[in-house]
Image 1 (spheres, rainbow, N blue to C red):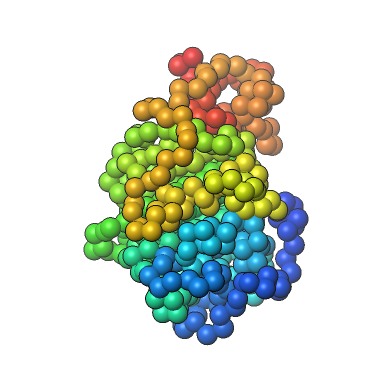
Image 2 (image 1 turned 60 degrees about the horizontal axis):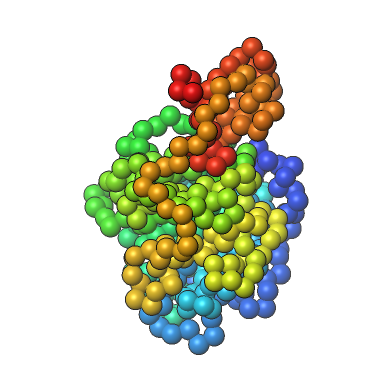
Length: 398
């Protein structure tokens, strides 16, 4: 029954998710190849790969995990990773779950039987990595994992479970590692601030491998400020978790303005948080032939900026030697976070102006999702915009 539950990241967005469909099988594109025998597969996943023609040995591997209701074919067709693989020369592995595992084809990021080291789906993904490395003589020091939504949440879990395997991660609209350990906790993680300190978040990672001392994966976090499937607070919590794991401050070392209304905050070049103003739930893409462009639009693939490109640059995939120095595209850079605007008004006025949203008569700030009380003209709060579209309570500060 656990596997058949209407669970994961689809719990609070069932109507939206039906736009993708839940077909049991998706015919893969001709250049996406299924690998039938890849070793131990306790999570009952399917393995698909994309291999650039004539791929040399000693190249990186990227594992790309689809979101709920999606397939390997969807992520192959829209994410931009295959075209970057051609450009930068690396193998891409596309794991795929099924309706037999979860009714909406979500990776089971909320169950220790599937998202911990040596167990279930996590162990199946590790087998896929081993197979790709063996088949292509890949560089084991340059293996990375990324994913959207449930795939993003599973990415965080994989980074915690296998920090000795993955050199970096890219978490798109995902959830902190080990936030939920049951279905009943999953929706709370999606929607609410868990009120944990950075140290408490980090402990959820380090508990997966007691005694492991590093190095830890470098992590790129992507979050839309208008995402009300996986609320924006998850981006902040992921930032807190992985900066604390790396032992660096939660104060950015730099900020950058990028295309698509994106604000990048960088933390000692170990963790990056990309906040996309107004973007809903999905992977950010930027169709086109420009250097920084890739991907194509579709259900849960939203136009604005190519997240795969910037994540790949952060990992150093664009450098033949695997250097970890981040290439910096043209940006506007400052040494401190943007100060933003501070506004004191009624909850009703904040909602009407797009600084907050209401549900069931209660109001929450856009971006941070902090509770503000009743939706009326008598309840007043101050809100401060700390990055485009990301508002926090600032009573007494305006």
